[in-house]
Image (cartoon, rainbow, N blue to C red; front, top):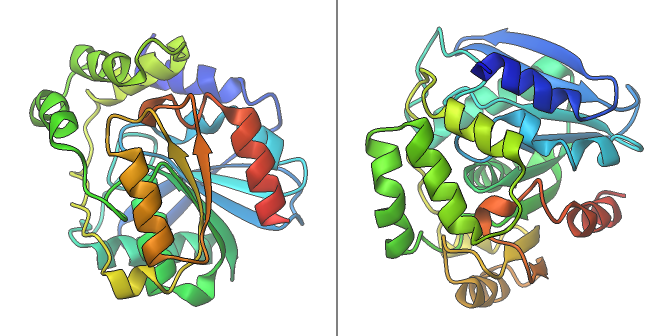
Length: 273
């Protein structure tokens, strides 16, 4: 199937009514998949690099029982958002884009949750715009408290320099270490790698003082190959002492967020309520 067909197939597995929204601003058009009661408290979900918003298919429908959920395709990545205007080049540009998204959705304050690259965007946005973020949840965050491990970077480098379906699928299989990664998630990520998109903004890690200003809920994949989980937990405790850390003992970086949904959703529901 094509990228768009695979995107729709995974979105169809949400098994709840999904409203597909298009928001236009100076950067272009942002695609948002929304579900849940229109008057429910908002939750905004930001995917990891190359993952696209349908990857929340095990999480969004559960949160949508009590919340209005908005899963966003990043303007600097594959998906249905298109950067036809000003090109985001800095973290500040991405923060301006996300502010425009919230304004377009009519959201003054929201719970914000991201995975991987999306967690970096969520965290840095909460630091830059604390009045817009009511709750902050990070799922196996990268470039937040720690940088990526060198072996992971070296293994991922071919798929970053010369993106392809085969390289991306190989990376995800290697990192998930035999876990039953959903075939459609794997296929969509592979196809996404070959879609034209604006280059993603290089992450800049927050300072220690900035990290002390937030107290997020943080899920840590203890089998992640992207970083040292033990050191990540230690850094969170030292720099964000008010944070809630939830180790996911069987998870790897790329098995999230689609796998381990029971644990993730249960903690998110408690934290957001």
